[in-house]
Length: 83
Length: 512
Image 1 (cartoon, each protein chain N blue to C red):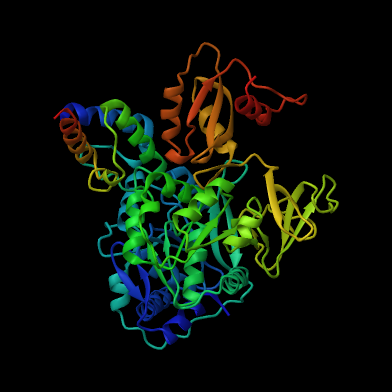
Image 2 (image 1 turned 60 degrees about the horizontal axis):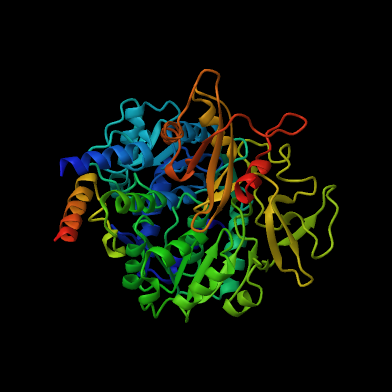
């Protein structure tokens, strides 16, 4: 899980979020930090990096609320794919 | 009549009706009216009224809405600031517009204090959760509205005076403060509500931020007809926006082409019944004809409406609709609204005949008072006849339908945002490894245009595209950051040495 969090943090910090929004932590709320075009890019990156197809219903504030929530959801989604 | 009279009238005639529903909190017209009176009375006591400006740095929240109406009722002009912009951009707007006070939400105030903004006014209007702001005079909404308002006689400014200032991207890289009067905005609201036949039975789900003209004009429109405005939690989650449409069941939805394209691609719009949705209002650009058809098929019972305009024209200039009209001329953006005159001018400002492409120029009651910077005439935005140069190229047909065919300026329209190359080039060229840069837009099926940058390295440097994108993110929101950065040896120039972004764009779109 920590590994997924780290991957997400690095990707989001380098590619999607302005540093003027403050320091990004796993628990930082992503609402207001990531705009809608960035979320769509993040979805594409998650699909490519973790090898599963993201359902439209899964792109919601519960799963995308923070890096921690994202990592938990990615973990669950990849586990269910393996199972 | 003044803008705040829209709210006063709505409160008189539909006191208990819901005016605004936010993800957190809602308000009736009469509640909003009382709250805004309290704010206006406080501003009045502080000596803030006609001629003064009060800035707003708020998200789409009830707090921001109360302050907006309160400022207007005080007779002062509002200055809408973009909360998602960087410190430098917002401070530049504050320095230029010099507001007497700032209405700000607690989390934005925390940021201002942490970053030590120098341009922040001394009078702050916030809520009880606001952090202490030493050396400044802090007023909270709770305390303002708890104070009893004795009979106050609020001053009434002239209807031709500035009511609102909205900051929008400018060609130079610096945002321009567009000054709109009560008359400007009321004329637009009146002609639009008549054109669409809106009544108090109507309601709208809004995804646009209130600091954009799109958000403000819809707020004014639905206040005039006493209809309810539902505020989306944001467009980050298109499927959630669709759920909001299903839950609130508004009669209308308005968005930019990007919003509709995204709903079609990333939500279950086609599979979700929305029986009450009657009006789909496409604003700020054209959807390709195939996408219009797809949208109509997804919501077959709804009428499509298209309009074209600019912040500088309060904003709507044309109307195209309903659906059968649109599908008869799917590439047009419609005809001039009542009172608006559209002209197509040639290179020497001579009027051009129908079906001839030239510069689109507009006049009418909605054309702005000017820019805060005062350079609207010197920059050629307003011509000697007082007409607005839209910066768009296009033609009119014999029946007066407008067709846009490009832009005379180098503005990029990406995800509904107006982006000028200069603002991004300035950021890129501030990086030590960059000698010069050129930024332009290339067609993109979802974003409208995708921002592309070409960069020439400084001698002895080898910048990486990724590193430059991260550099841009330090000063620009994601939506304004180049999606592609290419390192090149040189940029194409004109004989006078100016970079031709058009030549680069053509190279990228058509290939060498």
